[in-house]
Image (cartoon, rainbow, N blue to C red; front, side, top):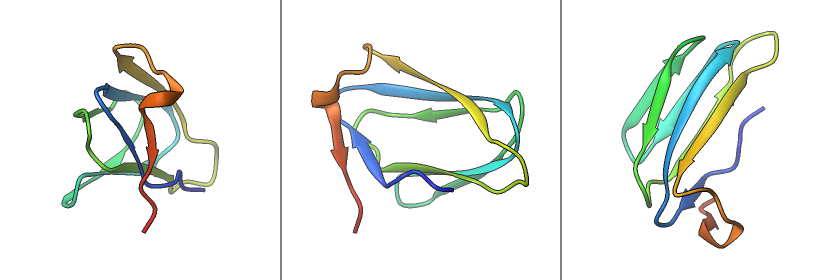
Length: 78
């Protein structure tokens, strides 16, 4: 499973991976394989998505500053 490409306008986001393995993509060129304990930094306005690459669940927290509001979310699927 992969999240849709999306952007959060005016919101910094951090993914804190708790369980599983995945691949995080931020912007046009940053691709990172992630696992438990990893943190992915996502600046405001950066195109992003995360994919589960393991056999089990990918569990992560999405920490937003300022707090997430639906008005900040913008779909960025091609």
